[in-house]
Image 1: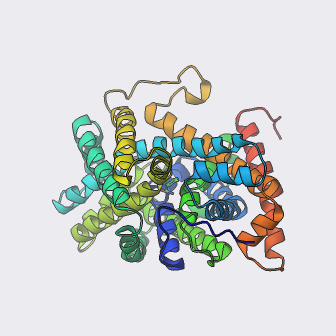
Image 2: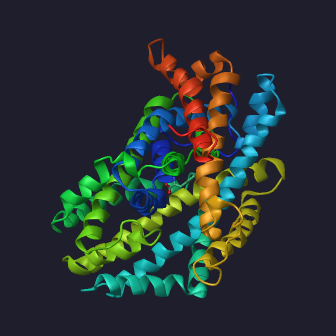
Length: 463
Ligand code: PFF
């Protein structure tokens, strides 16, 4: 039986609006900035394969679980978990899952905003003609000049946060829906164009081989953990962002179909980004494993040498900033929704409070690339020995908090919620689809996440 609950925050106008918003959340820096550089750092093909398997077997089923829980509860993730736990006569401790999601969102947004700031500053770099005819060394020194300047990074971080807060304060429906409707298709067009340029470098085959020919000798337990963590990160799972978007979803929309569409679009963007970037990397003798600067040190070379490169460069970094923007909104929405529900604040007040906290934590990431570049906050642990503040936040959120959050969401949806609740909310009919989903979230997801974790922690014996 469906519930007649409604959300105090409103509802998406249609199925398309939800797909666009959730795709806006999923498609972001994770696809275009992070996927290529972590693929480069983890050796290519085998890593990509593990990532794709994680998207299919873990990501899509968990996305369905998050949307169904969100739509059932129709509140912020904390209150949704609390309400459903009460209705199903479960422990209140489940609300902690909502809390860890709020924390993960705040931590991720704090560094996400700093990187989005790089993208925004590159709109102007590209527009000023700085990339015309540039060499690989030239691009690299433009990038170093940016990240070594804390004041500039701080200014861009602040601007990006303000832009995010303005949209969030206005509420989800006006602005966001409209923006993604045009931006996502345009992003695809530009990515195809860049792949077209990459094709002319003469190193396209090498890049395809790097991306799609698995060499399992390059895969470590930590790489598998990173691939799985990234599947969560890129689909915005494990922290309540998709859950809160699901809470605004009209009752009659098919959760399975929409989740598959979102995951496919998201994966396409990541693969296109890889196909645009690696040919340029190889053509210019660059290092695929050079880290977070990868796209900022490769794509400008393409823009510097193609016709209308200045125009396309501006458009590309503009779209990247927009993609980051539509993701940032979903990172902060769970916290804002909770403050509105529980602290009797207006949406504007809640947004400002959350924004201030995120901005402050973000200072740590701003300084990670300059003043604090040698600071190793958790240096006493071997995994964190060479990680600065930014690296630590990224590792803990993507590779620990999101997969653990996802694991608990799977356990909740498939082991604790009654079968009738999930069956009723997913509306998949009597065929095989529902049992397949339930099997995946009951067994495959939790076991896979656990094995990857224990293995990365060195608790499992070597195979
Ligand atoms: N999915 C976004 C990206 O790939 O850039 C990042 C993100 C957004 C992660 C929202 C988590 C989240 F809840």
